[in-house]
Structures are given as C-alpha cells and as structure tokens.
Length: 444
Image (cartoon, rainbow, N blue to C red; front, side, top):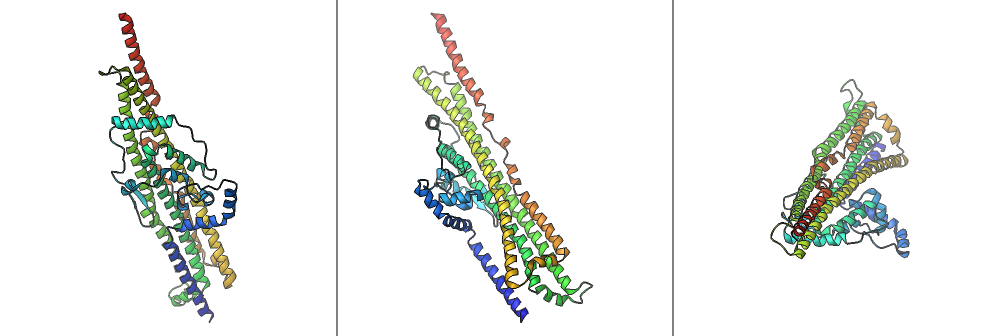
C-alpha cells in the first residue's frame, strides 16, 4: 500500500508540475507583467501616499518585461512605464515593417533594407528643416527636471529621444528595440538553464525517495557485477546529467549565442550605415558653407543667410552624432547592467525555490531529500558539479556578443573634426573679407 501511495503521490506531483509548466509557457509573454502587477499591488499604499503628497503622477512607457530587475520597484510605483518609450512614441509602423524578430527559444532582430527614412542627399529643403531643428535645439533650455522614480539612464534616454525625435527617432527606436531583445534573451537563458539544472537535481531526488530507482533496480539485478539499484541510480543520474548538458549546449550554441551576436551585429551595422549617411550630409554642409562666397551671388543679406544656414547645419549634424553615440553608450550600459542582474537574481531565485521545494518535500512527505542528495552516489554528484560548472561557464560568457558593438566601425563624433571644420569655414570667410577689404581699400 505504501508503494501504491508513493506512486500516486509521485504521479500527482508530476502531473501538477506539467500543468504548472504548461501554464507558465502559455503565460510566458505576460509573466513579467503579472509579476509587476503583484509588486504594484503590494506597493499600493506607498503609491497612494506619493499621490497624496503630489508625487504620484505616472511616468511612462514600457512594460516590466523590458526593464531590468532594478527598475521593477520603481516601475511598480510609477505605473510600470519607462520615460524613454514615452519620448519615442508609438508610431513606428514603417520601422516595424522592415524589422524581423526570429527564433524559437530566443530571438534575434533583423533589419531589412528600407528601414532608414533619411534622404540620401542634403537638399536645400532638408537643410532648411535642419536649420529649424538646430535653432530649436541651440536656442532651447536645458531640461533639468526629471521623475525621481525613474532611473538616471531612463531620464537621459528620454531627454535625447525628445530632443532628436524629429531627426533620428528611427535609429533611437532600433537601438531601444535591440536592447530589449538582448536583455530578454539573457533573462530567458538564465531561466532555462536554472530550470534545467534544478530539474535534474529534483528529478533524481524524487525518483530516489519515491522508490522508483529501487523498482527499476529489480529489473537490473543479475545483469552484471553492479547491484541493480546501484546500476539504476547510475543510469538515471548519469543519463539525466548528460541529457541536461546536451540540452544546455544545444540551446546556447544553436540559438542563444548566434542570435545575440546577430542582434548586436545588426545594430552595429545599421548604426554604421546610418552615421555614414549623416556624414554625407555633414560633408555636403561643410562644402556648401565654404562655397558661400564663391559664385555670382552679390546680395550681402542672401550671402549672410546662406552662411548662417550652412553653419547651423554643420553644428546640428555634428551634435546629432554626439548624442546618438551618447544614446548608444546608454543602451550598452543598460544591456550590461540589466543582464548582470538577471544572471545574479534568476539563479539565486531558482536556488531559493529549489531549497524551498526540497524543504516542503521533507516536511510533508516524511522523506529526507537533503540526505538523498548525498546518497545519490559520487558519480551523480561529480557529473552534477560538472554541469553546474558548465552552467556557470555559459552564463559567464553570455555577454560576449557585445564585442560586436565597436565604436571604431562607424563615423564617430571625434572623426568629424568639428573644431577643425568650423575653423576652416570661419577662416575662409575671414580670408575673403580681408581680400575684399584690401582690394577696395587699395583702390581708393
């Protein structure tokens, strides 16, 4: 009867486990939102106090799933939205039509030709538009107010997105989307690998304590020099460890690593193409500025207007490159910071959950799972330690994809030589003024 009872308990537990796993799979897209909702419910009194004292207005965009663990509490208080996505807005149908998120367990972001909206040539009409944006930026106040509940990088990203929304929102949107994909992959990797590692240990403990291994050993008695129960324990333990190692290896090298590198490479390649086109406009503006005094135009007001326009374009385009690179730094920092939190807190959470499950088994079944871990045999323990080392190795190398983002690949702010260019333009004007002053003065 005891064996029947144990078998029934095991089957019920196994069925419940599969049911929970299925439910989590179905809710995988909303799991972090649900978690954020729980946090918001727990922090409701605190949010009420903030609103009563005038600090309870909502921040904005993005879901908890797209934020790092350090943002969860702030998001729960502020309304689970980030400031950066609010500044970026939601009208990106064109960009999304040229973006593809592919993969099974993980995702990588592909950018097709046609994503970029920026015209190839810097026409007079586009230069006038740049002049308008430059006047608004250079003549505008510096934003110093911010939501105290937001993280600093979110505040900085929102300021850049607002200031350069009309000229560069496409590239800012892509960088932000790439960050979300890469962070999401790291979180999934930590969850999958932690579940595999914990599942192997829990499976062997339950099979041993429920007597399944002993019953399997009855079939192996007399099959060799090794006792049946020892052989069954060896086969189950070694098989589960090797299977776990194979699955981890396949997940990492078949999807995670190439997908992360693909996303980082797509981001860097698009950034290279985008800044190359910005540089084409910059060089055009520099050439136009230097040639203002050349030609048949004699109206001094028209000459002055042209000189102001192209000088504004030079400064504006250079500033765009500077702040785009600042935004890239922001994105890389968030990818690294958020991923480091996932790589620490997800394994820690699974470890705490595993200890809790083993403790519950010990308390309610009368079994001794903690002792069972030691009684599983040195072969299993050795192999389990090895896959734990493999687990640590994979997690420690999970951020290698950021090597694909190299500032030397694109045209940077420092390569524009803004100081030298402005000196050449002003020097050209001064040279022409001096020439005509000497010519007119000498003729009088």
